[in-house]
Length: 172
Length: 160
Ligand code: SF4
Image (cartoon, rainbow over all chains, first blue to last red; front, side, top):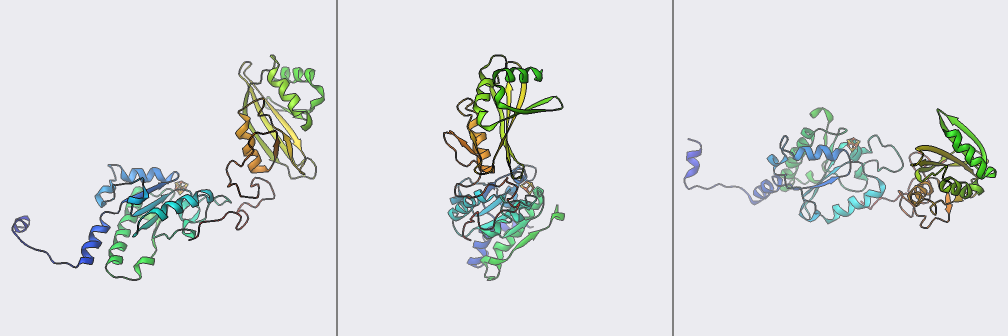
């Protein structure tokens, strides 16, 4: 049973929106915006042990033109903010942003004149991940939550676009 | 060993030295700002001193009425394997001291950093631009009268 049933001819019904959403959410290519220590955990997330490719996001592209989600992993200074914004602007729509770690989300421990106290001051953020640094599991959790959001968004949920998701530190 | 440095420098340019202090075997020589280049030239070129390496140049904001800043030089002699620290008090208005880039090219970026953070002008520096802060920034963050969280709107963010 099971697989045998699938071997014959057959068909599947769905809506176009559902199919596109399914394809889109399972191939979220990240733009690795690794600016400081959090980037190490982001790299670990891509390594075989945590294996972000299980979620279709293994293709880290170092050109924004081929990316769907920007993972801002690290401390964003005022001087760097224009760079982050420029790279975000170069990504094609639709695009999402994961703010990884305390620094990107709130300035973190760098409560000082040079660090932006939260990147949502200059780019729209979809998922905030707590932790300093967040464990790879937390980043994967953020990705899964983002996938759910993408699904909702593509299938007509008008409020989903502006939804903010918060991943607490206890997740890992 | 550090006493030998002080003795030799006193011999070469006694007028430059304003005082000394020692802490845990580290010698600090206080230098009059106008005589800085004379003293540095002696420190570098005299074979008995041979301070051929700049370890660091920085400043301290004492936040006092007179001689507000101390510019601090850490020098090292590869030949004699010893350090010396120079402290050069400068007035706040305007804070300026001669550049030592002509003697040690390595001083270039150290002086730029000190200029960026404290607003001290190094006269004769070939390229005195900011090191860390954006060029159009108007303040000097490591001064004591600069608030930790910065001055609102002094650093623009991209439009959201
Ligand atoms: S949140 Fe912690 S680990 Fe991440 S960039 Fe900031 S200081 Fe580094």
